[in-house]
Image (cartoon, rainbow over all chains, first blue to last red; front, top):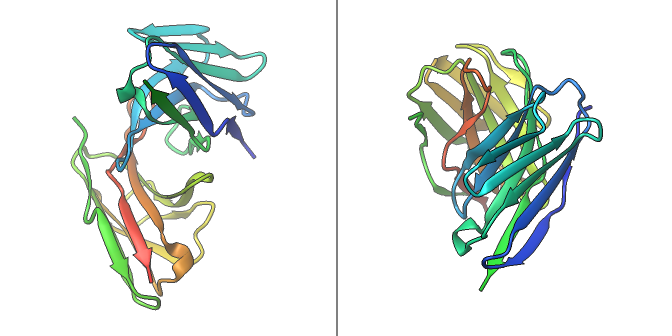
Amino acid sequence: GEDVEQSLFLSVREGDSSVINCTYTDSSSTYLYWYKQEPGAGLQLLTYIFSNMDMKQDQRLTVLLNKKDKHLSLRIADTQTGDSAIYFCAEGASGGSYIPTFGRGTSLIVHP
Amino acid sequence: DVKVTQSSRYLVKRTGEKVFLECVQDMDHENMFWYRQDPGLGLRLIYFSYDVKMKEKGDIPEGYSVSREKKERFSLILESASTNQTSMYLCATEGSGTHNEQFFGPGTRLTVL
């Protein structure tokens, strides 16, 4: 079945850039998502990229997609302590019956 | 904004009790989902529903059932709670929007003693 892999932990210093990586297996994915989960809360969509795009930038966030290698990354510039959270990579497709697949989540720890 | 609410943020139950977790959404979304989240395991899909009175098993349905009598409400039922069902339970909805993203509730942390 479909699989989404990401590392479990990332620790960075405040002000540095963070890069969270993800690999997926389903070549029919239409959308790739990044969700953020703050402590004690549910997941919230951070950004997404359509599968025919290579890059998407939104303020401090940059998403890179290498469709050939099925590799997705999220770069957070000037990482702040408020960015400390769990980040989930997910893949999905159009159509009401498609169930998205989530990675296990990467815990980003930002220290002063 | 889509709002997804869950009936309790924290719940403590005893082994063998019947437990109801409620999820309500206000955006008329067709699809609703129940996940459990455990450290190191990420999200695992328990059940989902495409429409009223319709339900489909996810990856780990054993020990759970669901009910969807109204479009806005999706309930997760633990028929006889066990300690291995101690977890964070997340409800999500998904509409027929352009990006198919999911909208999550705040979660219910269930402890079974």
